[in-house]
Length: 181
Image (cartoon, rainbow, N blue to C red; front, side, top):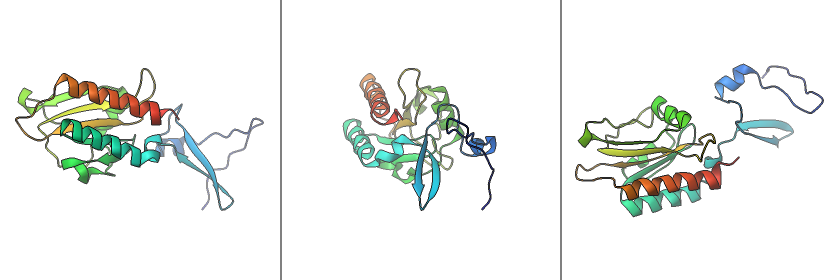
């Protein structure tokens, strides 16, 4: 396998070619995981949430048990945790809409009762939840590392201010524990 040749400068730096940055969706400030394997230097886009799946699954299950609604937690590329009626979405790639929420760091609370259509979180979503809350996992002006979404499937269900506060707390906690790469 041949690649692009780059020279190391006097400070030990190399420039990743634009083509590679584009393919990996790397932007200024993104972290790379660099390691040696069989005498080769390997680099991976660092997705901090993906490194702590057991703990994050426990957090998602706690949210499910607290508000009795299905939970999705993503990194910047795919669903890493999904439970309840959405468990089939685990490892699915994010939709353009979900990626936009992460990039713009906007939150949504949607309900069919109010005439809104649910946002598709993954490219191949087939779920049709009655209502949802979607929040980026971030804190302040920091770059978001994923999103958390909660979906309710019954017409009689409602979100209240406590549900939104809980989700906001969980999003900030996830960022605080796992998002500071």
